[in-house]
Amino acid sequence: MEVELPRLDYKTIDDSGLKLDFINVVYDNLIQLPQDVQKDVLKAIINSLLKDKRPHSKDDLRGYLILLQNPQFRSTTTYVIFAHLLRQIAALSDHDHHFLVHWIKKLEKDRFKGLLDRLHNFISVRLFPPRPQDLPPLPKCSWWIPSATKVMALLNAANTVTPVLPHTAFYNSTLDHLDLMAEYYAWQNPSSHAGFSFCQYPFILSIAAKRTILQRDSEQQMIIMARKSLVAKVQRRQLPDIGMLFLNLNVRRSYLVSDSLNEIARKQHDLKKKLKVTFTGEPGLDMGGLTKEWFLLLIRQIFQQEHGMFLYDKKSGVYWFNPSPRENYQEFNLVGVLMGLAVYNSINLDVRFPPSCYKKLLNPAVVPFSNPRATVGVTTFTLEDLKLAQPEVAKGLQDLLDYSGDVEEDFCLTFLASYTDMGNVITTSLKPDGEKVNVTAKNRKEYVNLYVDWILNKAVYPHFQAFYHGFHSVCASNALIMLRPEEVEMLVCGNPTIDLAELQKVAVYDGYNATDQIIKTFWDLVINMTVDLQKKLLLFTTGSDRIPIGGMSEMHFKITRVDGSELLPMAHTCFNQLVLPPYKSRKVLKQKLLKAINNAEGFGLE
Image 1 (cartoon, rainbow, N blue to C red):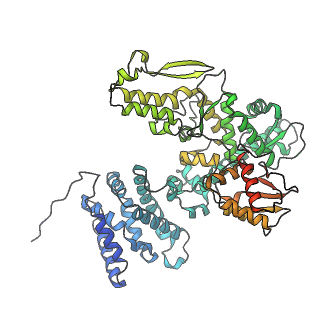
Image 2 (cartoon, rainbow, N blue to C red; image 1 turned 180 degrees about the vertical axis):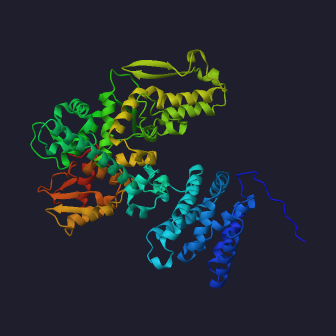
Image 3 (cartoon, rainbow, N blue to C red; image 1 turned 30 degrees about the horizontal axis):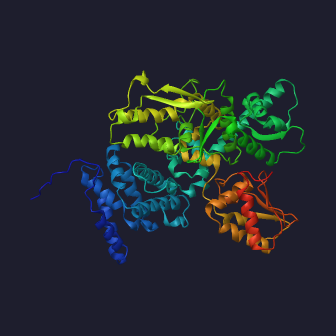
C-alpha cells in the first residue's frame, strides 16, 4: 500500500529549512571516503536527476541546493553529471530561481566561493580542455557552458542581494582568450546570431575583456569615420593625407583650456579617431608623451579651486560639481570628453570623483538616440552615496534622522537647501512651498531623501548633463551596458591595486643596470614602503596613483641616471621616467626619495 505524502508549498524565501552545517560535515567527510562509496553517491545523484525534472515542491528545490554544493564536482570525471544538474537548475522557472537566489546567499563565504570556483573551472575546462579526450565532443554538449553560466548568474544575483565576495570574483580570465568581438556581435545581432553569448552575462567578463570590446568597438567606429573622411576628400578632389586618420589638437600652453575647448568643438566628428596633440610653437612628434602631458596639464588646471568648476571635499578626497549656475557649460562637456578620450586612448587620469558620478554616467548607459533632450544622469541615491561624496553633510543628515528630541523645535528646519555662490548664500525649495513646511520627526526622512537628491541630481543637472554628453560623444557604445560603475572608474583612473614588485619586472634603465647596488636599494625601499607612499611614488612618476587595467605589464617605467648627488630625484610624468642621481647611502636615497614624492603635489616635476 502506497501513501502519497502531502507536498510542501512555497511559503518563505528566508529559510530553506536545510541544516547547512550538517550538509557541510557530510560533504567534508564524503571526499575522504573510498572511491567505491563516492561512486555510489554519484549514482544516486544520477538517479535523482533522471526522475521527473519539473519541481513540484520546496523539497525538490532543496534537493537541487544540496546537490549543487557537492565538492565531487571539482573533478573532471564528474563533469557529465554536473552538466546535467546545471542544465536542470538553469531550466527552472523564475519563481524557483527567486527562492534559490535567497537560499544561496545564506551559504558560508568559503562554501559560496567553493561553488563559484567549481563553476569557473567547469566553464574554463570545457572551453579549453587540457585533455579533450576526457570530455564529450563540444558539438554534442553545446548546452554545458550556457547552463553553467546561467547558474552562476544565480550566485551573482545572491551576491548582489547580500555581498559575500567582491564582484571581481565572478570574472573568468579564461574568457579573455576568446574571440570577444564575435561574442559581442552575437549579442548585438540576435536575429543573425541566435544563441548564447557571454555578453548576456557581463558579470563573468573581466574588466580587461570589457575594455577590449569597448576599444575595438570604438576602433570600428573610428574606421567608419576615417572612410567617410576619405570619401569626402575624394569627392572634393583633394589628396588624402595621414592626418585625416587622427584627432589632431593644436593648443597653446598659455591658453590651454580655451584652445582645447575650441579644438574639440570644431572637431566633434573626429573624436573617435586616435588622438595626437601638438603644442603650438614647439617642434616634436607626439609619440604618446605630448598627449599624456596635455591630459595632465589640462586636468590640473580644470580642477584648480580658482577655476570654480568643482568643489573638493577634504574628508572624502573627491571632487563634486559646483552647483553655481554658469553662462554655458562647455567646460563640463570638455571634462567629459577628456574622460572619454582617456578611456579610448588607454591613459589613466588622476581625477577623483565619488562612485555616484559613475552611476550617473551609466544612467542611461547609451544616449537616447530618438530623443536628444531626454533626461540623463538622474539616479536614485541614498544617504550612503552622499557619505562617499560629502561625508560632513551626510553626517548632519544622519544626526537629524537619529535625533530623539523635538526635531521641529530644536532644528528649526524647513524644506529648503542652500549653497554659496560668490560669497552669497542661495536657497532653493526642495518641494513646492518648501519654505513653509517645517521638518518634523514624521517627515524628516522625506527631507533627507529630497536633500540627497538635490545635491547629487537636481542642483548639478545642467553641469552633469554637459559632462555626460561629453563622455558619451567619445565612448558611445552598446558595450557600456555591460559595465558596472566601478568598472567605468577603473577604465578612467586605472586599477587601484598596486604591486611594485611587478613594476620592477618591467622597468628599464638608462645609465644604470638592474644589478647596480643603488637600483637594488631603490627597489628594496619602494617595495617595502606603505601603500600610501607607493601610491605617491606612482603619482610622482606617472601622473596617476593607479595602474593600467591590464596590470603593470602595460606600463613603461624608466630610471635614468643623472650626475650630481645633491639633486633630488625628478620625474617626467609624460614619459613615466624617474631621473635618479647615484646616491651611495641607503639613508640618503630614502630621505631624498621621500622628500621628492611628498613635495610633488601629485604631478611630479616636469
